[in-house]
Image (tube, rainbow, N blue to C red; front, side, top):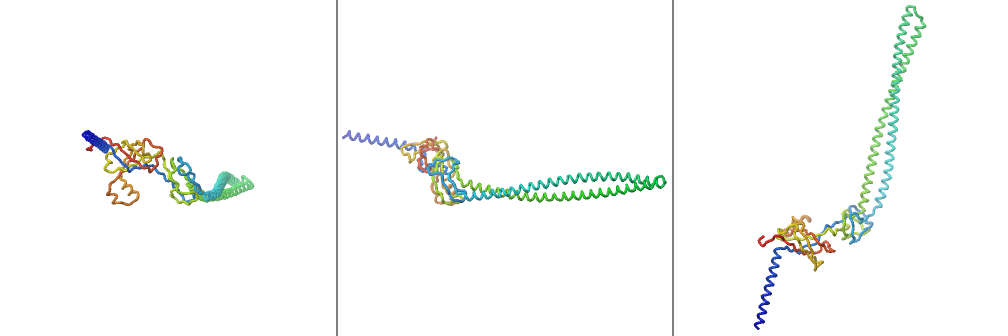
Length: 365
C-alpha cells in the first residue's frame, strides 16, 4: 500500500514538473515570439480590363493557363473599324493626289513666272542700252546738224547736206521715242508678270488647306489604328490566369473586367498583427509558417515589410466612409513576410499561421 502511495506521489510530482516545464517553455516562447492566425498568402492581382466598348470575338486562354507578358488574351470584333480605315485610306490617297497636283501647278507657275520675269528684265536692259546708244547718236547728229547749218548760212555747204543731217536727227528722235515706248511696254508687261505672283499665294493657301485635310485624315486613321490595337488585349505581366469573367459574343464596355492574372513567383504572406505587438517587430526577423493546405509541414519566412497604417484606415481610404466602431476596437497593422521555401502550390488567399521570432526581447522590454 505504501509502495502504491509512493508511486502515485512520484507520478504526481513528475506530472507537476512536466507541467511546469511545459508552462516555462510556453511562457518563454510567448515572450520570444509573436503568433498570428490572421494571415493569408497575397499576390499582386492584375485585373485585365477592356479599354473600349465592343463585342468579344475570342478568348484565347482558359483558367489555369500559364501566360507570358505580351501574350494575346482576348480579341474583340473590329471589322467595322477596318472598313472605316480602308475608307480613310482611299480619302488619304485622293487628298494626297490633290495636294501633289497643287504643289506641281504652283511649281510650274513659279518657274514660268521666274523665267518670264528674267526674260523681261533682260529685254528691258537691252532696250535701255539701245536707247542710250540712240541718245548718244542723237547728240552727235545734232552737233553735225549745227555745223551744217552754220556752214550753210556762210554758204560753205549745200542745203542738201543740211537737210540730210536734219532728216538724220528727226529719224533718231523717232527711234528714241519708239525705244522709250518699248521700254514702257516691257515694264508694264513685267509688272503684269509680277502681279501674277499673287496666284502663288492662292496656291500656298490651297496647299495649306490640303495639308490640314491630310493631317486630319491621318489623325483619324491613327485613332482607329489605336482602337484596333486596344481590341487585341495582351497580358501585362507573366503569370497564371485565375478567373475569366466574360465569354465570346458578349458586349463589354470600357473598364469592364475581363480576366484576373497573378504571378505565382511573386507571392508573400500578409499577417495582420495587433497593435500592441507591432513594436517588437523588425525587418529581417525569422518566421515559421504553417499553411492550412500543408498541415504536417513547416515553412520558413522573413519579415520584409511593416505597415505604417492600420487596416481600419486602409479600408476607410478605399471605401471613403468612416467606421467609428471599428476605430475604437483593437487595431491591426499589416506585416509582409517573404516565403523562403515556397511549397508547390501557393494560391493567393490561402490561410497561414505565422510565428515570428523576436530578437532581443526581455521580460521587461
